[in-house]
Image 1 (cartoon, rainbow, N blue to C red):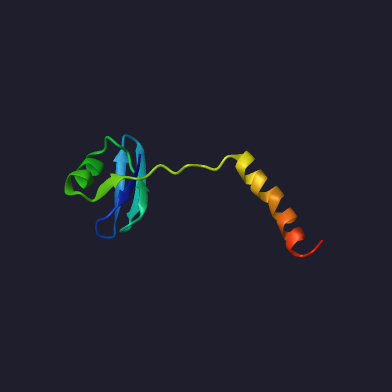
Image 2: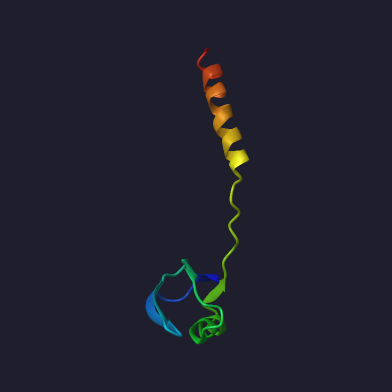
Length: 80
């Protein structure tokens, strides 16, 4: 789960079963932490974590339309 971190800068080693992860926590940074881990629950209880806003990806069609219209606009402004 992605969270926005607002506590002091720190690092932690998280062990989840046989999986071990090193995580750096920076104020204002976004961090991916296991939702059910005890450390995640502690940071949430302390108010250092909140859910990160979901980023919306641009569709390929929108990006392609923007790219295609730019040369036409450039040509029109240059008198071509």
